Length: 196
Ligand code: FE
Ligand code: FE
Image (cartoon, rainbow, N blue to C red; front, side):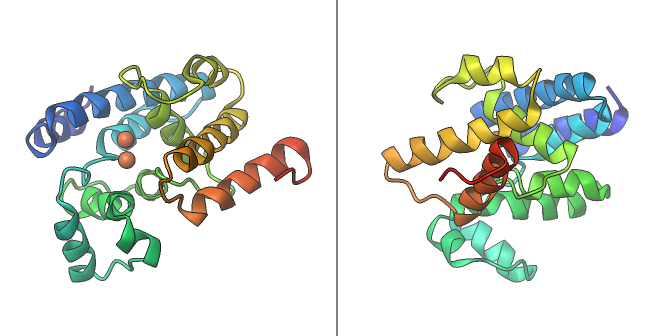
């Protein structure tokens, strides 16, 4: 593990609660496995995994305050559901507080909750690793997702978005329209047409 990774790992241990820290390590190692499989840069995948939730344990009102202070635009859906903010605030903090300059890493962190149409390889690796890391146990279809992730990355992204939309809808949570946009894109890519 590089010195940079070690240093950030130590910093995060102080910032995150115990469960979030465990999740973070799970995402870091899962992202590195997917990077091995798909020929992506392992160091970048580990940094993205390590930092993706760096803003998650900041209280909601403070997340809103920090976004406003640093002129990070807040959409209506994010104001109503501040837990969505930790992705873009996390990307900002990864750059300013943790010294990560790589635009691919910062972008992967920024889109890790909703994904976005036409994601790059690192974006998809983080998105999938976040969903299936070993400590996760509540999401439906986990065994299927975990197996599929090592054979069909785009298909896995599509499956996760499908499950997220249906699972969150069942809980009457508010699904970000970006999640739907991403789902439509990967659905279309998969079937060559729109089935929704
Ligand atoms: Fe997150
Ligand atoms: Fe996460």
